Amino acid sequence: MIETENILTDSLAQALETMAFLTIIPPEEDMAAPEKTILAEISFTGPKNGTIQILAGLDLCRILAENIGALTEVNDETCYDALKELSNVTCGLLLPVLACTKADVFDLTIPTIKNGDDSPKWNEFVEQSNTCILNIEGYLVATRLIMKN
Picture 1 (tube, rainbow, N blue to C red):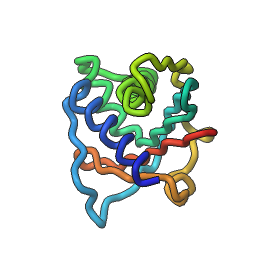
Picture 2 (cartoon, rainbow, N blue to C red; picture 1 turned 30 degrees about the horizontal axis):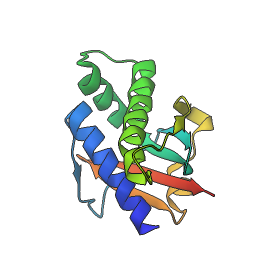
Picture 3 (spheres, one colour; picture 1 turned 180 degrees about the vertical axis):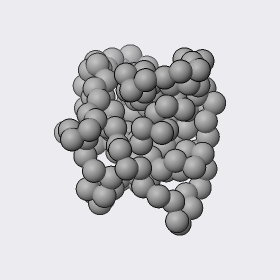
Picture 4 (cartoon, rainbow, N blue to C red; picture 1 turned 90 degrees about the vertical axis):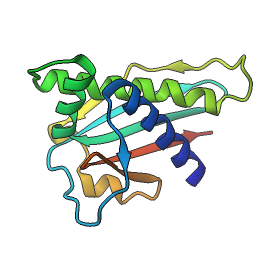
């Protein structure tokens, strides 16, 4: 599982730096978990099948929306869109790494969001063994790459 975690982390780091000018830094021991979480999810099928999940707090999503869209004012909807776009770009960067040949073709779903009561709680999400916890400039984010087949 460590290999898929590294692939996902590398793809997410590249997407964050390119789109939102944010960097993944080493986690600190006493960082607070986000209270209001938003889960972005995108799936892919092809030579390999899987799902990428990114669980983040609303505060980070606001920064994503501001940086990605060069916005001065954001609302919840733009925050959700920013996290969906981050999952989409991360998936696009990850798939060439998973491909067996240059001719491999993948189909993607449209990114979805779960928020409020539909979003998993932080502790429930991070307790699963295939979850990677990251620090994105002071904000905790949890990611997961679920491979099927």
